[in-house]
Length: 580
Image (cartoon, rainbow, N blue to C red; front, top):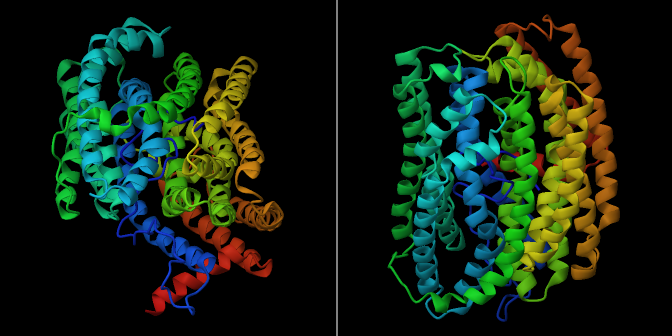
């Protein structure tokens, strides 16, 4: 349901949970066990406190990872410019979409809950099961790489059709170097899942930083050797292609290698096992089949987005590169806040569902929804009000021009509307996975993606190609709202009431606080020097710092006055940590 183009080293990859750095593992065991002292706090209180604390810690680690990821994307735009950057984005999109078909959705929806259950039920704590799973995945991923390489020209024609020969030829050339990324991406994701279920979050959080650093170094070297000037796809010689494609592949390989020492630290020994029948392939196929349906429908939606944006791409118009940069901005906020909350709640909800404690599932779900809404709302306001200065400060360097920054700000303004609905829809989707149920999210995804595609095609036809990327984002936002509503309606018969009244009261207060912060922010930004269509870098920095501070303080003040408990809880937690 994400609408994102590809998985970057710093992106949540379609909104799935990522482990957090130095987070305390939330045990999958029920808290109210025989022998626990009668004075122990109620399970719901302990769960809420642990989730909030773990989410805050994971957010810090995620911020570091995603910060280096933004430097990575800044370097890509500065080195390649908008047009060649679109080609690069398409080429990187191909291996990640093949990965999604094979493993991406299945990992978070099927394999993590299964690994958690095996960890609890098997005499060896799921060791042999994980070894078999890794062995099968390595073989499948290696075979997929070979097939993808043979079909590279076909894949290029599907996703970049309608462009000239130089454009499609460069996509194909880069794809030959970048398609093997799907092998290392898949191995990294599986190792991270094994570490996650064993209570180790640090390595999966920091390994993508290695990837980011390699890619940053690659494009830094590109700028040193070739300069930071926008060129045409036909001007990319083999030297440039080998540097860009090979450096990107190296980054993913280094990320995978960086996770291997952590397996030993948690006591896991990767031993090749070929008795795949012991994996319970029939059960995995049953659950994974619906997830494959979910992914396949998403790919149809992404196919439409890529083709429409490829047709609209030009020197200054917003194409794949700008669309993806903006989407990664959304994923930065989503990953730091929402994914941290989901990662903290997912093992708990899975365990509670397995034990039939659906009251605990709904308590976590309600709390997560309220926390995500309250904390992400001011970020969405900043994205909307400060779209122009953000685009200049974050992206306008080297070959990425001022006109490209203006195009980016328009897309970011529209995309901000979808931030909170996206996070809520993802939380509800993972609640189904915790049950475990992949069938319902797959079925929900069909009308959601159909709605999104119809809106995006309609907006593309009605408006100028200059606004194509903004139209794609608007279609995304509407589909996220539809996904959240449908998921909530279908969850209630399964787990009971999720506290909709309390959620809506919180959302109402959040809307009031967010609108107040937006109005004050707009007033202050308009009083500061600088034309939004032609901001200097210094003017953009001033607007970003002053406007961001005003929006944040105003929202916090209104949230406190309106008694939005989720905000006051976060503030209190920060004060306690600083006090220590």
